[in-house]
Amino acid sequence: MGADQETTTAALGYEQARDELIDVVRRLEAGGATLEESLALWERGEELARVCRRWLEGARKRLDAALAAEDAEEAAAETEGDEPAAE
Image (tube, rainbow, N blue to C red; front, side, top):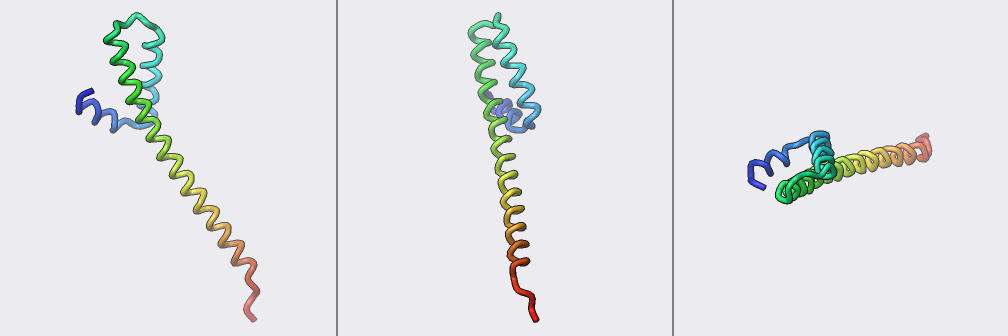
């Protein structure tokens, strides 16, 4: 794969990479491609799968961070509610 295609692949959004990956799988499953074409499709599919995986891992990290922040806020609110009132 050339540098131009790698740059293009890295710039793909999740939905674009997923949709192209679906197309690659359909083409491979349909058969009829030469060995060289099939290998090129397989390599493209592997790269697209890596792009999707990176997007999903990033989304998971963001979700985990948001949930951790929410948990911290709830814990802080509970702690404030447990303190005795100042007289």
